[in-house]
Every structure is written in C-alpha cells, then in structure tokens.
Image (cartoon, rainbow, N blue to C red; front, top):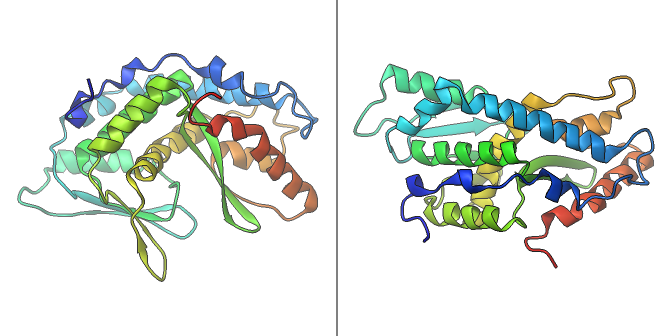
Length: 265
C-alpha cells in the first residue's frame, strides 16, 4: 500500500545493496592505473555506512521526528559555488522555540555544499524525512555517484539514490508523491525554475548524501591519490584543465553510467 502521509514511509526496508552496486562496475578500469578504483570506491561506501549508523544513534537525529509541521518554515541560501551561506526562519502563526531553532541550525550547519544552485523552502517534516531516507541509503550502500556538467570545462559530483534497486525506486516514488510542490526552487540571474517532483526529491536527498560521503571520506592511498578523484569522492566541483583530466572525467562518467539506469535491462 502506498503511504498516504510522509510520516508513514518506512525507509528501513532498503536491503544491503553495496554488492549489487559494485557488481555493475568493472574491477580494474583501464583509465586509472595507480590502484584499483573499485576498491577505492568500496572503502568509501563502507566508511560512509559506518558514519551514517553512528549518526542514526544520536539524540539529535531522533529529535528531528518531533519537529512541528510548519509549511515554508525555513529558507536555505547558497552561493554560486554551492556553499551554504545562511538560513532564514520564516515566522508563521507559531514562532519557533529556541530549542527548535537550535536543532534546525545544528542540522543545517553540517551541510556545507548543496547539489545545485537553489533556495530551499522545506517544511520541517519533509526535511527530516529526506534526511532519514538519505541516511538509510548510506547505511545500505544504495546510492550512486552522478557527474553533472555545469559548463564545458566544469563538472560537479553529487550522490543520489540507486533507483535501479526496486525498493529504493518504490520509496523514492512515494516520497515524490508526498513532497509538496515547489519545495525546491532553482534560481539564475534571469529566471526562477521549478524542477519536477522527481528532480526536486533527488536534489534534496543529494543534499544529505553528499554531506555523509564528505564526512566519511577516507583516502586509502594518501601518497598516490589523484586530486581529481579526491574531488570526485568529496563532492566538490571539478574543473578539467588538461586533455588528460578531460579524458579521465569522460572515462569516469562512462564507468559509472550503468549505475544510473532506473531498471535492469
């Protein structure tokens, strides 16, 4: 039965998916010789899962479920380089208590990079449910990297749900159906853009997944990592300045392309 309220969605149904995700990738990509990039990625998944499980056990995480359902309660701003800038509390019929404001700030202060240039207008319950889903995805390895071209010489990595896993797709669709429209607003100098429901939810989930991956990132080979790969795994913008770097980005994109298929062929 589809959930009729966002609080009814049970995100804990996601199975352990790391092996299924890693099986889609070749073991030794020919484009990266120094060491096995697949093992590098697997180590990152495992450390992220460990950190996410610790986060689930904190009192702060548990308190989020008690937030009031205040529509358009908080607006989050970022700059042109995808960095968190400030939070604006929008006063409605009921002002926030100091404790609630502190809880919100504790959450938002952990988020230093956003998946896209945007202004977020989430209700508190919606924000919490996206956090809960993203944390479950992280603990089960049910998320994948996505390479986004910002302009001809610049890319951005964001981590998104692995929608080819059936239960992830089902939960994702339920969250899309129950997330209020216009929760996410993209803006440029010329116009406002309201993404469709699926992209809106994918971006909100990426907000939390990106933070979890960056927090848990551990470099297994500190003397030999490629700076481009370091940026890849820490969800920072990538600017390719040489033919070699452009080729590496293209090869990474092709290597992870199977992860973005919605369903197995």
